[in-house]
Image (cartoon, rainbow, N blue to C red; front, side, top):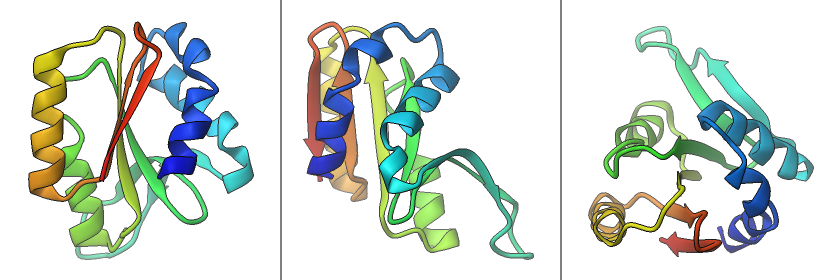
Amino acid sequence: MKELAKKLGGIIDRLSECQNETQAQDIICFALRHFNCRKRVRLVKNSDLPDLEIDILCDSFAIEVKFDAKYYDGFAQVISYRCLYGFENMFLLHIKRNFDYKFLNAIKRLSKKLNVPTIIMFLDRKEILVMQ
């Protein structure tokens, strides 16, 4: 996860130019291309469960990306991927344009309580925080 955060640090200026989550996914996927990443991958893992779309799927991990979203967004997806579909190495990435102390506190608590590895990027501060 530290290596992932380091790679994301190298594209923080490009992410600042994004208008939406899809653009952010495109930039992230390109930056992580040496991990053999693909974006917006639809998988049919189990005929008893609904299909699954993963924002970014790489050889050894997957990322759920949220761009300027609510603090609680993304946690249910990561938990579903893990519990229903068996993705153990799954991360949540929240990208926020502006620093928000309450948002940060909420993410920290949810990440810890739900055991969801989370990376937060505050674009205005060019800051990346990792919660494991």
